[in-house]
Length: 222
Image (cartoon, rainbow, N blue to C red; front, side, top):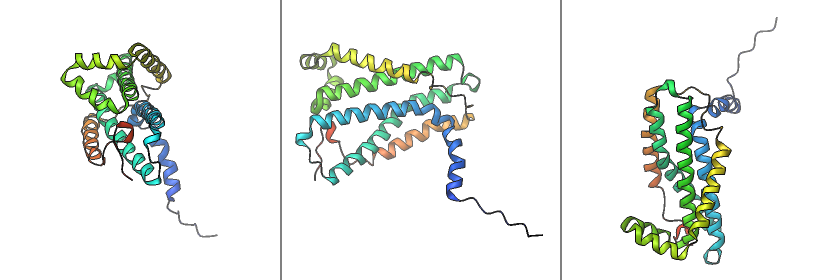
C-alpha cells in the first residue's frame, strides 16, 4: 500500500475563496452596503460633474490625479463613517429580538431615506454653488435666513428640490429590499463596539486628508 499523503495546508487563494462567502454574508457588511454604495455613487457623480465644469482650471497631470483620488478616498471614507455612526448606535440599541422585524424594516427605511435626502441635498448644493459652497455653509450656520435669501437669488430652488426628491425616492425604491438582511445580529458587546470603532476610524482618517479637493473649491499644487 502506498503511504497516505500528508494533508497540505491551504493556499492563500483557497483561504481567501473560503473566507469570502462568510465576509460577504457578514451582518454589518450587508447592513452598511446600501448606505456605502449610495454615498460613493452620489460622491463620484458630484465630483465628476464639478471636475467637468471646472476642467479649464485644472491641471490633469498624473500627480494631480493621484492626489485627487487619494484625498477623495480618505475624505469619503472619513465622512461616511461619521455619517453612519447614528445608524450604528441604533443597531447597538435595538434589542436582538427586533432585528429583522417589521419595526426594524420601518426604522431602517427611515434612516436610509434621510441618509439619501441629506447626501443628495449636499451634493446638489455643491454642484449649484461650486466654489461658493463653503461660503454658503458658513452663512447658514451664522444667519440661515440671509444665506437662504442669497442662495435663492442665484439658484433655481424648486427644480433642484424636485431633482433631489426624485433621485432620493428612486434610490430608496431600488434598495428597499436590501436594507434588512436575514443574517442574525452579533452579540450586544460587538454591536456596542461598532460605533466606537467607526468613530475612531473616522477620526484617524480625517488626519490623513491633505487638504480640500479641487471639486470643493480647493487648489492643488502640481
